[in-house]
Each structure stands twice: as structure tokens, then as C-alpha cells.
Image (cartoon, rainbow, N blue to C red; front, side):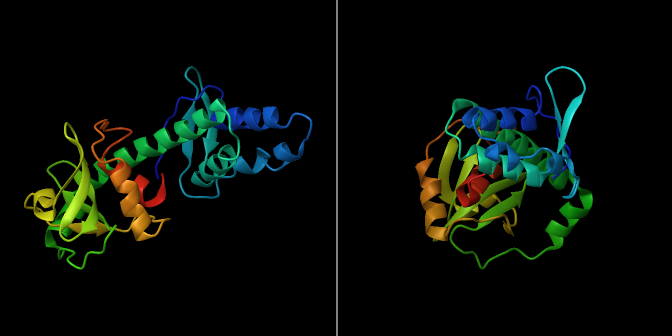
Length: 215
């Protein structure tokens, strides 16, 4: 994932550290397991850059760091820990949106999709996508020629794969899938009818990724 500017005051690391500190003020074990020093190591891909609401860049955080922080915050049952997790998820969703836009507008990739053979051997819970004019639209394959997807103005709905494709070729995206296919489909239906579409933080691709891996 590329670079994205967040807005968490003091930086996510500082907030997360305070959460763990308050959880176990009488013991240093929690903080020892969450030492800030390795979190600044640019060891994985391109780092995220996190800004405070005012001022200079506070922290450079890698994707591995985000994952580590979310795992640790999941073990802390406090409102602040939930806010830290939600903030990271929002940043990741924003980045997916930016990546989607760059990918859909990349001329070489658009040409390759036009020339590529459509994926026809679809499996239940496959992550599908189609090229629209200036973006890619994503959905989850339910099987039997049906797709569940998030539409702006309509919410999460089911349609035939023909309606989903709208004349475009259908491709399978190899996104992360943490759950088995039955669980993925079950997760998809828990949000059927939701109508809170947000291009930046709750769009069609975010929904499919949530169904498949929880993020």
C-alpha cells in the first residue's frame, strides 16, 4: 500500500502505548512487548505517514506495525483501543480507495483487462471486480450466478452476475481470505440491506474485503 496521511493526535503509536500503559500500570510487561523502537524500522514495503491534526509528521508506520497495533488493541477492551483500531481501519480503507482509483485509471492495466480472458470458473466467495469508466466495481460471488455488492444510493444488494457486470468482463481479485467460504457468505448476508455507502471508507471493495478477511 502507498503513503497516506492520517489524523490521529500524537500518532497512533503514542495512543496505543498509552492504552497498554493504562491497562497495566503496575507492570512493565505489556510495554516491553510493545517497544516503540522496532516500529520505526522501514522493513516492509512503503510506509504509511501519520500526521497529527496540526503540525509536522509524527510517525512513520509500516503495514506490519498497523497489524501489530490492531492485534494488541483487540486484547484491550476500552473505548480508546476501539478508536485506535477504527482509525487504522479508516486509513487502510482510504488507501484502498486511492489504490483502486490509480489502478482503474492506469492505461496499461485497462488495456490488459480489455484483452484478458474473462474469469468463468467462479467459486463461491470469490472476490469479483469489473472495470467501469473511471473506477473498478467489486462484489462477492454467492454462487448460482448471483453476486452481492455495495451500490451507492442502493446499499448492499444481490443481483445476477449479468447485472453486476453491466456488459463488462468479470475478473477475480486474489484478495486475502481468512475465513472459509461458508463463513464469508454468512458474513456478507449479515449486512444485506445496509445503506451507508462512503466512497472513502465504506465502499464496494471495502465491503468485500471485510466479508473475506474482516478488514
